[in-house]
Length: 437
Image (cartoon, rainbow, N blue to C red; front, top):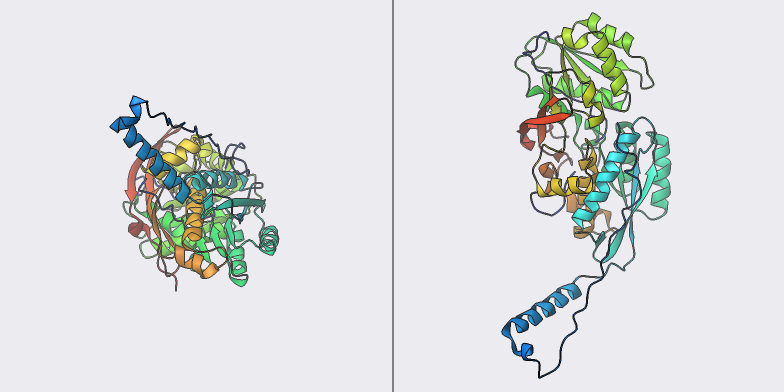
């Protein structure tokens, strides 16, 4: 591959979507079985110990039995301290894609959300005795459809909205949340514009700047070179162009873009345009289920042999189409982090994929907001999240109080067939976006 010394990195098949964590310790396409239904809690009947009152029972005087009795009493007292989850349910509105171009990403998010809700509540799915109910609505990746759904949910009394894999949708729901005084936690939507959008808007995933900053760590030398951003003509694509300019603009000779219409299915002409442009570095930022066809077209036109390619490690369905020898930036793959939270995520969702942790973290944030705040007092929930730090599946993450950026580690990786290997973990500070004004 020509100019392979530049990097064989990656930056982003990550999509547009774009966080925090549970209060516990340091710990596209997904399977259609990752449904919108809230997982049913398994309950086990407690076996009641029958106390023996017979004074002739020699065992009654056994000190060991006395200790056991004390333990039983302590357990009963502890159980009595736990409020029964029989209060008024707290309904949380989840507006995300389960159909359309980004439907697979939405399913990943929802699977993580269910797992995270169990983890963050120790299996109770309740806070302060009030069960948490998830009302899931498909936005189809359409902002108007999403706003209609959000309006209906708020009309029903919902004060927390979460979800959204589409940056175009997230940047519309954010202002809606502020206008209606509800808490909004964006999902995998990656647009940098979500950070600092307003006081009511948070995010549970990463943002484009963090992707590009991670990719830059793989570069040997780009001084004076040309960079071409190859992306979809969408909020996500435009965000990646801006992020590349922000991160690499001072070190490269030029940053240009080739934006492809979202409804494109034939990518050969665009692959030829890449060849004709002859950049020093091609930065690919792609989202959705057209990725395999896009990568196949680039391969058939000889782009990986002619141009150094930087891209992100996408969801596992795309791994087989990558050219050999590429190093990637990565938002998440299940083998990268070693935390209690990640172990719980992978146990609950064995097929955990690129955006599964974004749902898990959203659940942690929801539980934190409800534990330290009140669903009837949005400012209290906002205060509960600002500056909050926790251990998420990806390791320690924190919410920057000033603009609600989700500060989190990022990864670089290599790929051998269907096996990804961790190359490096970048600290949250190393990839932190500039503070929004």
